[in-house]
Amino acid sequence: MEADVDDFARFVEARERALQRTAWLLTGDWALAEDLVQTALARAWRRWDKISRRDDPEIYVRRVMVNTWSTWRRRRWAGEVASGDLPDQPAPGDVAAEVAARQLVGHLLGGLTKKQRSVVVLRVFDDLSQDQVAQILDCAVGTVKSTMAQALAKLRAEPRLAELMERRVR
Image (cartoon, rainbow, N blue to C red; front, side, top):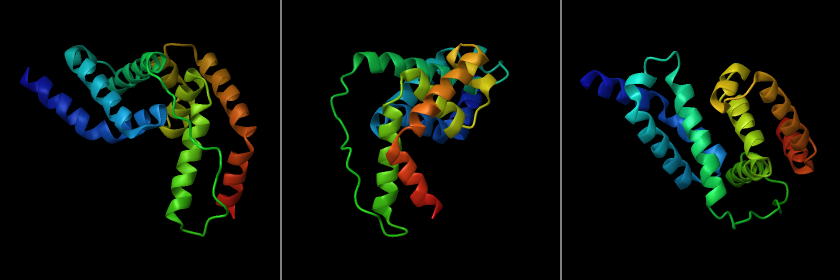
């Protein structure tokens, strides 16, 4: 049992920041993201002896995160709506511009379906392979590909994202 505790502690220490980032990208709320990571880790701890013997225990923990977030999203009220207005052209190196960009990305991710958002976060931000994403979401690789294509089409149609990317390239 002591080996399990040490192994789990090492896993949490090594992967907590990455899991936290994923949770924030899924939820759009830092406090809720912390709750999501803690919930996933608590659920994983109960089965850590079996999970740790798998090829990649992180896949299991991410699956727990995505599934938990999915059920929370159905139950929780999401009445807050971010403003659609962006400030005028920012000065280079402007911290407010960075915050506005993050808020825009969060808002645009919020406009995707749960499955699309999960695929985009896992593929783009977490840089997982299509096979890993399919494992986490418990679906076929073809579903990951088509869902990603649909999500990207929706994001490409958003003029504010194109404007943001144009500013970043300059």
